[in-house]
Length: 123
Image (cartoon, rainbow, N blue to C red; front, side):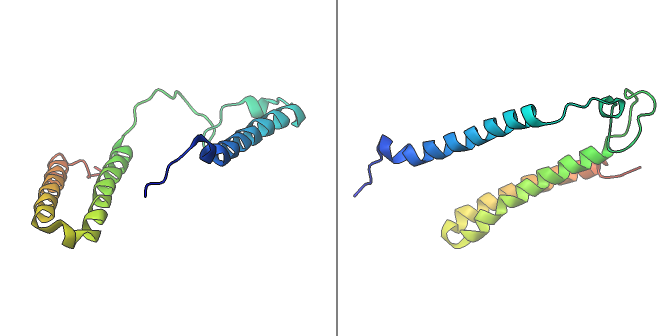
């Protein structure tokens, strides 16, 4: 027997969303109305991670850190795809093994490409 959903079944969810949004709106307005309004020179000054601003912000800098971080996220997400495969390893049979070898081969080719381009070297 298939369960039928009606609009009445969604009333608690809609009510919860309305209460949550109402709380956010009321809190924002209350803090705006009740909070102090002191504008000082220190509050209006540019602030970046606790370091005083020195020089021009438009100077070039190395992006190696960001490149390594993006590559880490990329390979980390690809490894996450292996978990469902490992859980269903027996039920997937030979098709699952072949597909995983194709996936791992593609992953390995990407890693070899990154090593050839020397993207992980800090020098």
